[in-house]
Amino acid sequence: MSNSLEDHKECGRCNRKLKDAKSRERGFGRVCFKKHREEVAKAEFERNQQRLELEGVG
Ligand SMILES: [Zn+2]
Image 1 (cartoon, rainbow, N blue to C red):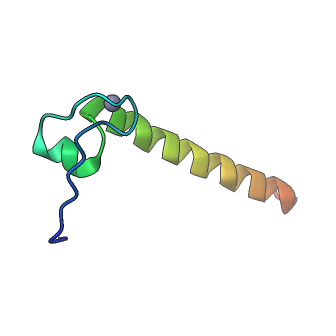
Image 2 (spheres, rainbow, N blue to C red):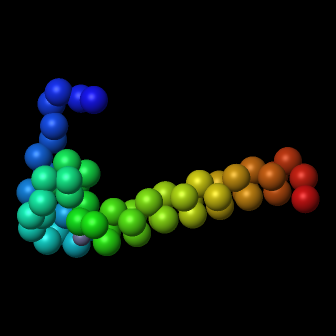
């Protein structure tokens, strides 16, 4: 979609050199990208849980 592809030379998680174009585009190696996504999802889930607790739901 975007014309200006960012070229990350190193992984944003482990700082290892990224070899394939897809990883460089994402800024994470394949495994780290998966972990990163899981962490984001988990953080979001916990945020939602906290909000529900604050609102007194559940
Ligand atoms: Zn990595």
